[in-house]
Length: 111
Image (cartoon, rainbow, N blue to C red; front, side, top):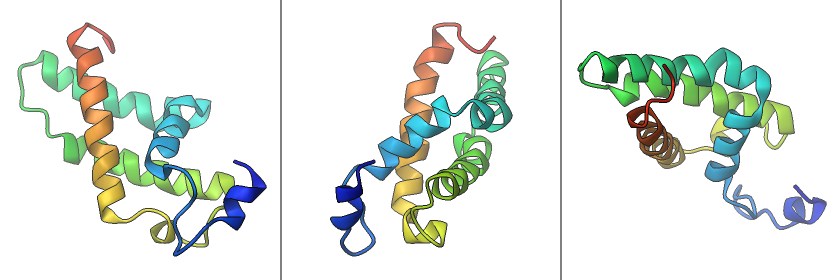
């Protein structure tokens, strides 16, 4: 993030796609990925392999909440997570992660 992006913030909105940036953070931060992302996606994959209905919200939303918290804390971009991420942002993260990872699960990843 550039310092000019901070200067361009208006109405608590950042000058970049915070949903996409957070998703990239969750996948690329080694500690977050190992502790939160991989286990959640692995649970989703196990349900898929077992032929069970994959309840993406109950599996992924706790991980997404933790990811949003970690992202805001690591980059110190707001006092509160809700200043950056609204419910629509969280839903966008859920849908994007579910869609992307389900494709990988169907290819045989996360065994």
